[in-house]
Amino acid sequence: MDRKLINYLPDILKNIEEFDQLMQSEQPEVEWLWSEADKYIDNSFVLTQDESTASRWERILHITSKDTDELDVKNLRILSIMQGKLPYTVRVLYKNLLAMVKNEKDFKLEIDNDKYSVKITVALSSSELKEEIEKLADRIVPANMLLSVSLWYTTHRMLEKKTYGSLETYTHEELTRLDLR
Image (cartoon, rainbow, N blue to C red; front, side, top):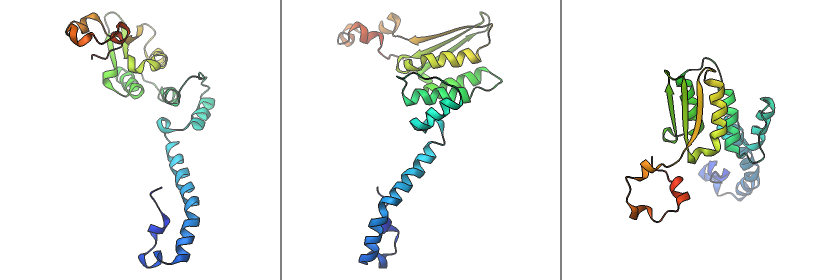
């Protein structure tokens, strides 16, 4: 830790052996206290909480998570339930999607009022959040609108602008997952 207790003493006391020994013996306790304070602050916010705090919130909110879920996915699931308040507007949906995906380029929200449809396209880089985005959109989008949540794959139209020489190093699988947005 870069915060040494000895550095908090006045210069005149730093050179005294007893104070040096005292500061060295107290240093581990103070480091533990600082780390616990940091952990307390981190656990005060959903996106930075640790595993034990996330599991406590899951019990409180009656959320069942998969064994394969990472901490980030659990935290986003908790956040989406906590943010689920009325009234639901396009802006609320957009802000919730942005909070989950974290980048405006990683999702696309299209609403067609004439056809009563909402289409959310999620980038492959955020594909593990697709199920959570579907649950969020299911709660927010009105029941009379058709909801579609899909992944953003590379299409032929996106690739036609590239030359064969620049694409020959990729396999077909890599090309479908290539980010050309």
